[in-house]
Image (cartoon, rainbow, N blue to C red; front, top):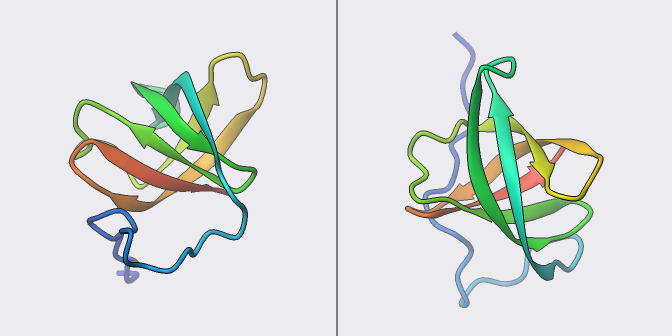
Length: 96
């Protein structure tokens, strides 16, 4: 069985040095994540966004899978995403 990389359970705090490769801009856009070959989906809100990642908010994140496709409202592109950190109501993702 292959070893899985552990996803951090909390977002980067104010005390941590900035680790993002690109600055994110604040946004407030609806989005849908799709997983399980399109059979599973959740709605979310994109709170900040860059070319390499985003912060997504949900009502609750425990059922959100580690990898999924992200479709942001008003954007033609579907982006493969992977969770990098998780809190009770938000996740930070990087785009593949």
